[in-house]
Amino acid sequence: MIINVCFGTRDLERAGRFYDALAAELGCGRTNETEKAIFWANPGVGIGFAITLPYDGKPATFGNGVMATIGAKDRDQVDRLHAAAMANGGSDEGPPGERPNGFYCAYWRDPDGNKMNAVALG
Image 1 (cartoon, one colour):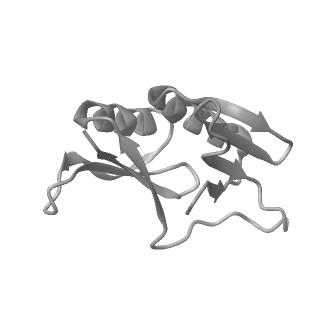
Image 2 (image 1 turned 180 degrees about the vertical axis):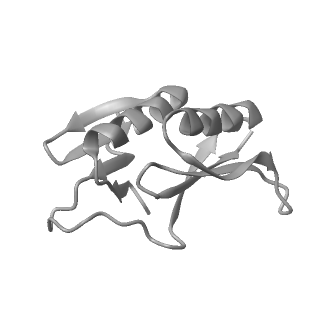
């Protein structure tokens, strides 16, 4: 069972603004932050997502082929999450739409190059 996803960042403040916008759309918020990390979750759930400056002091890099998926409540929320990502420094990796597998998804990268997507569950 995965209880947390964490991405590295080169700029904690910039990444914080980016993920605050996505978290707001999902109805969750920051649950904790330190000098090196910020954590988000739904109230009472623990940590669901985090960003961190790498603890080894080396530059943060994204994993090629690595992606985190957000379960959206419906197609409209997929659209809004993609729009929030684009409006806050993200780059498009695939606009909202139905995919060959029948899922309605959108794909983006955060300002550090980490890849995410949202898929409509409802």
